[in-house]
Image (cartoon, rainbow, N blue to C red; front, side):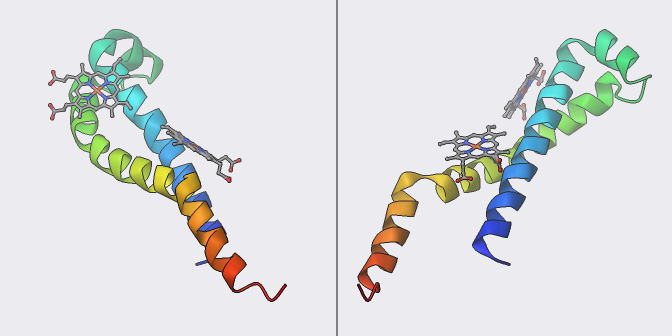
Length: 87
Ligand code: HEM
Ligand code: HEM
């Protein structure tokens, strides 16, 4: 897997996980609305279960995303490639 593909995978997993964490969170606090909107599919009990588990992959993806996109990481990579630059 190339670095670009890895970045994309992390970006989009994080986006999906964020949406799921927010929806499941709202499924606990606003369960009447969320349950009705999802035609009873996301019940309060399921939202609770999801919310208590989803934060783990969310935090992993979040940390990976911040590390992979941080300037520090990029600069170090750039410096490395600069030093091997024949110019
Ligand atoms: C839950 C919060 C976040 C979500 C859902 C998220 C999601 C995304 C997504 C989907 C992209 C890709 C956009 C694209 O490919 O066109 C992206 C890019 C980026 N994000 Fe985040 N992000 C979050 C938080 C952060 C944080 C906290 C930082 C900084 C510390 C950050 C820094 C960046 C950078 C620098 C890019 C551009 C990377 C590049 O393509 O060169 N993000 N983010
Ligand atoms: C990035 C967003 C979020 C993250 C990372 C997150 C994470 C967490 C975590 C780690 C817990 C504790 C679980 C435990 O007790 O083991 C929790 C509890 C809870 N969250 Fe979230 N949450 C987020 C967003 C939301 C949103 C948007 C809502 C609703 C508007 C929400 C509603 C709740 C509620 C009601 C509880 C308490 C459940 C209980 O009674 O124990 N969360 N959340």
